[in-house]
Each structure stands twice: as C-alpha cells, then as structure tokens.
Length: 287
Image (cartoon, rainbow, N blue to C red):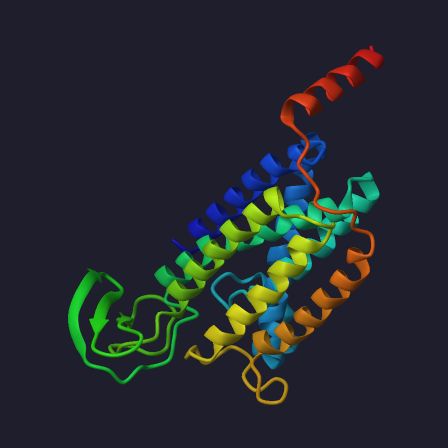
C-alpha cells in the first residue's frame, strides 16, 4: 500500500501538471520525459536524505544499502528538492519556461504528498507520539491497528499493532500525524491550485507560497511526531525537517523579493481556444 500510494500520488501530480502546463503555454509533449526525470531524482534524493540525516554511519559503512528496499525509508523534503532541481535543469536545457513550471509543480507536490501520507498511514511510519488519553470507542478496526475516538485532544487517534508495518510504538493511542499531514497537504493543493488559476501576480509566487505554508505545517506536526528515526536535534534542538524548513522559508523570501520586481500584475491563464488557434497557426507555417 505504501508503494501504491506513492505511485498514485506521482500519477495524480503529473496529471494535474499536464492540465495546467497547456493553460500557461507550455508544450505538454515535452512533459513525459520531464516527469520521469523529476520522479527519479525526487525519489533518489529523498532516499539519500533519509540515510544522511537518520543513519549516516550505517550508510557510509555500506553505501549499497541505498538500493535495498527493505532498509530505510524516504525523507519528504528530499523529493521536492531533488525533483525541482532536476526539473529546472531539464527546463533550461529544453528552453521550457522554467518559472512557470516551478509554479505548476507547487500544487502538484502537495497533491503527491497528500496521497503519499496515506501510504505512511498504511505502513505505520511517520507516526505520532503516545498521547495519554482514554479510548472512548473504536471507529475502524484494521489488521494493522485501529482508528479510535479518545476523550481529549486530538479526539481522534491511531493504535498500531506489533508485527505489522514499520512503526515502533504499539498498542497505545498515537497522535494521527500522517492523517493531519495528508489533510493539510491536500488542503494546500486546493488553495494553491485556485491561486495559480485566479490570483497569480508573478512567476514564483505559487512555489514561494507553498514553501512557507508547508514549512509551517510540517514544523507544527513535527512537534507531535513520535517515530525514533527522524534526525532529532539536528540544529538548535530542531528535527531534520524543522531545520530544513528554516532554510526553505528563507529561500521563499528570496524568491519573492527577486521575482516580485518582475511581476506585471495578475496573470490570467491563456484561454484554451486561443492557444489551440495559435498552435494550429504554427502548424500551418511549418507545413
């Protein structure tokens, strides 16, 4: 289920990207190769981040562990960092409007994350810390654990059973951090997709907005996480993802300051019929 949800997230993200690319004048014929490069780079870097920040000694003692699917996992931030870097390089090489593709990628990243965290729920990873509350009722009982109603915050909790999944806290209520992040990411996707279509003032705005709001969401949820391998106390007592979030927000501010000066007011998507006429005209010229 974990792998299936990751692939589903990638597929939906690429479907969204293709739909939006044509609306801003990007040739969608170039995108299949773009998607393959972005997916490969994103998964590779997220995998590398896991070992560098969580188990560096193990990785440097045996780098081939990188290729063993039964060992280690993925760090989400590595996906966007690796994927965006590879995507930018591809866009520059193919002369595709780079900042437009970056803005298209922002909602797509949140859509992919929202589905990916459903995979984390099924795998039992990225789980929350133990919450000392009383269970009032069982909402759903599955092979690997239960969703339960509890008497205090968070009012909804998860209980995982030993021997199923990769979690390390069993038979007690946990904060539903995977569910929170999935709901938060899908909500961000909706807001960013609307902003991209209706309220875009400059190239880079959508990505910068995503970076700031996701960093806030992730840093907040990190405070409720209870999984042991997550790069704790990496910088000033912050976890790996919280430390990266600091730099992500700083980078977003730089993007806003640089790109806002180039903005020329709200940018409206190209109408599909106008774009089709333009493409037909180009085809006629080319014979």
